[in-house]
Length: 137
Image 1: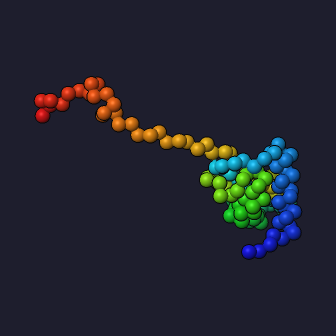
Image 2: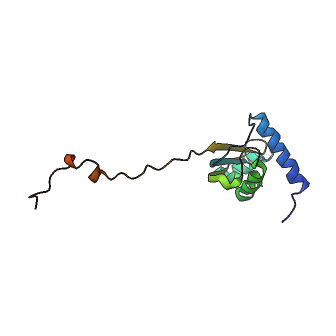
Image 3: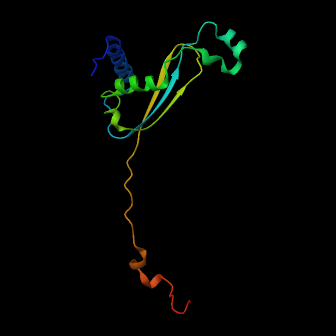
């Protein structure tokens, strides 16, 4: 087990402050869906890259990969916005086109647990409603 770096601790504290500023007072309990939009910093030469590379200009922009971003975010959200990352049942992640400063936009949605309807054997529930099969063959 490794201890979190001072940078990781600072990031977690920042996430907690941002969550409070967004109105989150207690972690969501139970199942959740987390959607992540990762915006890399737009470099100063973005127009030059766009002319050179067209629609794929942002492929050369340095950015944390989604998998690593997801791990750091889940650790930072644990106990702040979500109870525990074990409750993440669905997630999406997308690297966005840089449009300014680097940032991460996170949307957390509770997932309601649906109770399955118990099976109902309608053949024995009301036999008078079923047509007779006598002489059908």
